[in-house]
Image (cartoon, rainbow, N blue to C red; front, side, top):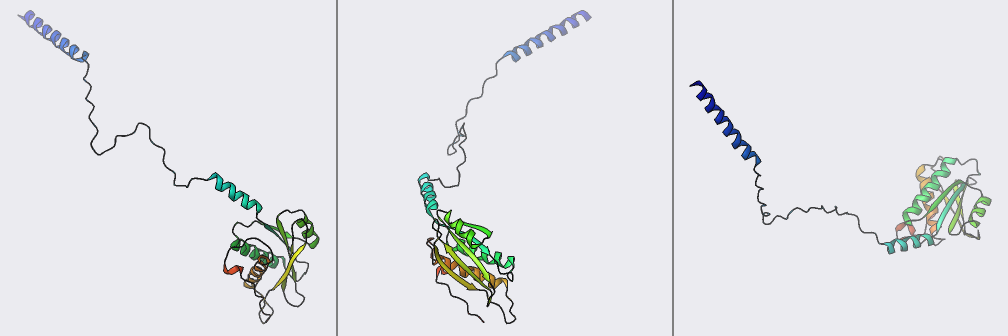
Length: 214
């Protein structure tokens, strides 16, 4: 009796093992490819590169701009403060105000600043240049604080123009950075009236007015 039960259990185990092996050996059916949802574009296998927001560069326009810039005149500015009553800080501030006014009025203008420069240095520098005007600023306190300038032509060092601007003072003989800046802007406007730098149309290109001496 006991042997019959053991035999029966063994047969059942063998049958179950055979069925499991058969099922594991079967190939799983591949799911069917579903059609894409209507109205939704199918994803691209190769993603498109992001579009740049920058405008396309026109090589011809770049060449034209470079050619125009190469033919445009520039300015070299130096200062001579031989008058010991004028500090270096005042000369630098007036020169800086002049440069800022020139850049604001003439877009793309090239300006070189040499700092301290004597008259002989300015003449030599002008002769060595092809398209840069050389401007020499000189300061004096003979009667009142004043900045004078001389413009030298490139190559020839010919004097193209001279001018001056008063640096105003108050009733106590004192001046301020506001008056230094105004004198620098005045010099810049006079320079633009004497050389061809193609200035843009703006109030700054109107003929300068010399401030009255109080």
